[in-house]
Length: 492
Image (cartoon, rainbow, N blue to C red; front, top):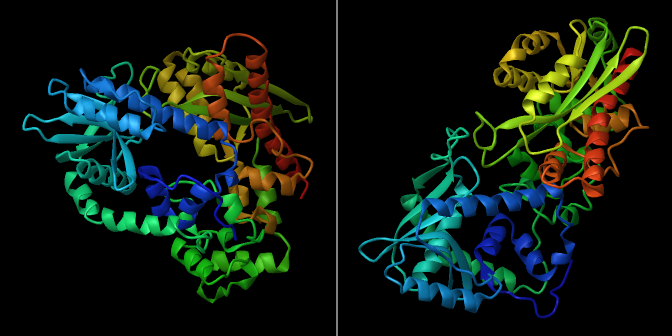
């Protein structure tokens, strides 16, 4: 149990209040022990950067406004600058307006002046829809802004429009009036702020059980601290266990799989618990052999890496539409010879035509394509066929040739050390202990996306070459992993 460190800033902000609403312990730790947060990953940094960029682009939809330029950490300065801009009757909009009420401060993405002297508060998000937490976020801003003396009569959420398609970005955003929903939440904000102040005043960290709230609505940065004593085989690794059940058990201090009664579990969950207690895998060897026997050589082990941009930049794509920038392909012939092919796009041009051409050159007209969660690879290839019509026939001919390696582990092969997941990241170190993603500079798809998005903007040089090599190594391991897993399955 941690105690308070001396002289932290206990000033409340919208972000801190939102943290406290997710978990009281999270708020307390953010103030008194921020050092417990892990270093941001490349994918997390990209999320923050995307949010900033979307907010900046959104201002273009409100021309003639002024940005509050004082940094947010200079709270008195940003509040004074905002007040001066509010007094300018000729100014239609203020960006990043700062307000403080009762030692609680907020920054409003866009504040628009209405003819009658009241204001329209607009919160900007990089999502494609309004979420409950967005309404709460806006309600807190509304409360503080009015407490500072402004009359806010309308509250909106501005988010990305899923119908928008590049190159026409005129309809990039949708503005939804959330005044009624935000007004209902706003009535509770004073009580919420009082509760957050009480949390902040506690001498030790609040005793809050872990649970599904640790990842909803956002991944908590203190999970590694709070979950440090969770056993390897826990209630959180029981397949499809309802959130309410997990939270109820955790609140009772029941964390280990061995502590759970199987009476209230469904058949699959009870089977998982019994398997963990026995400590032995459950394998339907005959079903695995039958599935493997259907594969036709040569075998093409294929994996794509994709990117998704909040603000689309490639023809025909909308906000957060995925597109491939890389693939790895291991080819195993009937004689056991294994060859490797890959493609990685290295600049900001559209990767899809060149990638599709390379794929069509690397994949022959016969043989089984193998993927892990093959629906994803099929979807990527199907979208490529729409984008690159001259290769559409060849690309679409690949679709019925797929075999999904994931199905083996969903239906016929279970192991206690998969920890209730069939992800290749969980399966590989158990099935093929000699291979692992641990220690890799790029170790998952989200990191690959973030690294690629930043790397293609770099000039040629050592930094860019190093990052590109890291991406190649990661994607190659994804398909080599499938090769080795197939080898193990074939040997059953």
